Image (cartoon, rainbow, N blue to C red; front, side, top):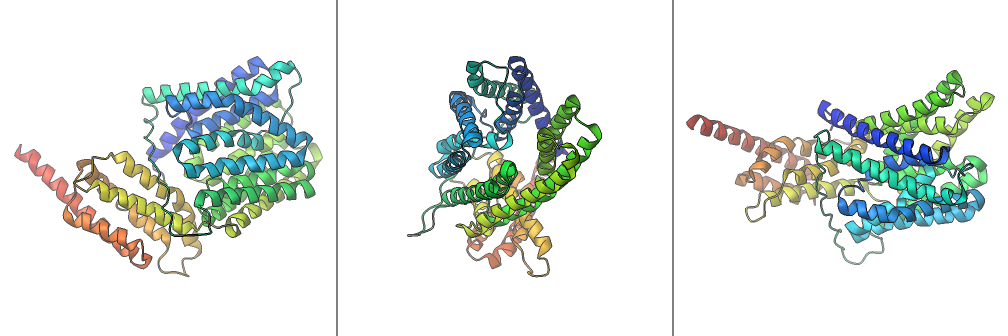
Amino acid sequence: MPMGAGAIGRALRDATMTMLAVLATLACAMAIAPEPGPAVLAVVLCLSFSRSHLDRDLRGRIEAAVALPVVGVVASGVGLLLLRVPWIGAVTFVVGMFVSIWLRRFGPMARRAGSLIALPFVVILTTPYIPTHHASPSLAVLLPIIVAWLALAWVSTFHAMARRLGVLPPLRRMMATAAAPAQGISLRPVASTRMAIQMAVALAASFLVGYLFFAERWAWIVLTAFIVNSGNRGRLDVLYKSVLRVLGAAGGTLLALTLTLHLGGHDTTTIALILAAVFLGMWLRPLGYAWWALFVTIALALLQGFEGSSAARLLGLRLEEIVIGAIIGVASAWFVYPVRSTGVLRRRIADALALLADAFDPATPARTSDELAMALDQVAQVAPAFRASRLATRRLRSVHPADWVDALFACRESAMVLFERGEAPADVRRAIGVSRKAMRETETLLPALQNLRLALTEAGVATELSDTGARRGG
């Protein structure tokens, strides 16, 4: 579902608030210790907090504030291990990321804990360990903790202020996600465990290849494998992100090289370009993952720099490492306990239809339209990969899973109208029931969703006519 002008405007406002938090945190960090390490850490943590919404409520802010000292110490410790004892650091990194994903199976609280556990490892990939030179030993130990608290405080402050002023919409209440019921006895782990295993295998292979063949440049391989497996929504999703990652990174590295060759080593200009790239990446990310890959690669390439006459060669090496990381990530998702993307899509469509059925059931307590919007957003997250697949396989199949998505979204506007009223005619409820039954036999799913759209449209038109007549009569 393409973004409209309103969605682009919201993304711009969100990116602006996050960038203000980045600048405030960066200023504080540089005032405390004018070193590159804390400055880069400040930027990465602000971006992480903004996307993860750990500041969603008071409880989340307290949990994050209490856990941040541990996060800071772990980030510094693992970063130091990767620098001094690489193989032990790699094992620690892989185990930490496995645990952070595996915990998702235990519910919302464990999911929040997993987000906090993953945070230092994400920081390490984008912020290699940079020792401090001018700070005292005690301040050097405390700096990651102080910077983390500052980032949380500024992100929370600017986002809360923006929501209070109406610049950003209120945060939606998180939907409770029930665990999938067990279906008999199976030797296959649950989805979250499979994704944790996939991530562990991809990272282990990336470290192995990076350490053995790419010496000091292993980080680009590991970072790419991590990115394409993050938020794994099935193997098609991983393949789609891999292609976009490679294309975006290629363009980003080329632009960064061009900028570096023309601007030389002007530090102030480079810093401004890095911040501009980060802002554009945040703003345009909702338009497509490739934009995020493009601008983040520009920022990372400018941060790490190119060295004089070897710049063109280094460009080729970085692209090679990105491609290798993407191949490792795809191979892990495709062959290690693979999660079928079609299964993920069917589950999310089924959840949206179940919510519609409950909402229009007279015996069900009233629900809010936010719940329906969030359920449809879950479907929208997996839609781009299927739409890209449909373009590539248009001649091979008459009905594609992307057609289910289009048919479901065609129901959105009419469903929202009826949803607000909290009632629906019997033929709408019947059409919802038929669509839910069709989830078991997908050959009939598209016609069922198309019939549901017709029923919702007719009910919506009847509702508008009824409201118009009531206003005229009044």
